[in-house]
Length: 181
Image (cartoon, rainbow, N blue to C red; front, side, top):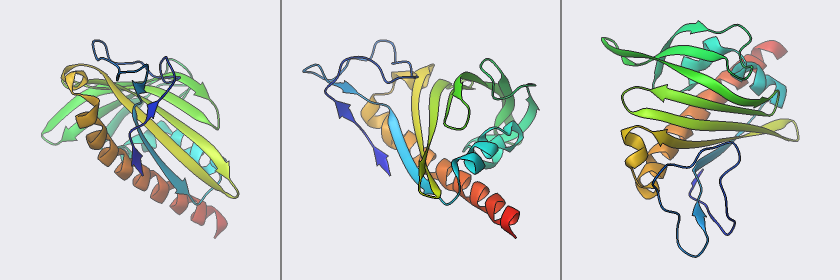
């Protein structure tokens, strides 16, 4: 599910940076970032185990094609994933850095993809019975992509993140099934 939220509260979305130079909607409202959710048929710990394994990043993140290195201590604040984006032979090397983390429930990242810029991404996990609701919020914060109006950016990010959550769910649920068998 992709949503564009207009909230009657001042300020920024916790954990995300607002684009520089982009005006807020009128009347004291503000645009929220692209937000997608998906129910994953696994526990929050099983979802977290996939997020905490940086080597699995290109298996669920749309656009990431390979991992070059994962910093020791991932996903501690300040650690990075060293990945490539694109398709061979047009691969670009870049990084994703942990901005904030609450182990088992929240991961805030700054994903770089030169030359398009950088995005801040927040993943939240919430138990829903024996399953997990995974929410992903993404906002382009620098580079040419940051000049795109939210009304154009949100559907593009939304489409990408629907697929990312689908891949994440398949990965997590497949691993959960293997641990039961």
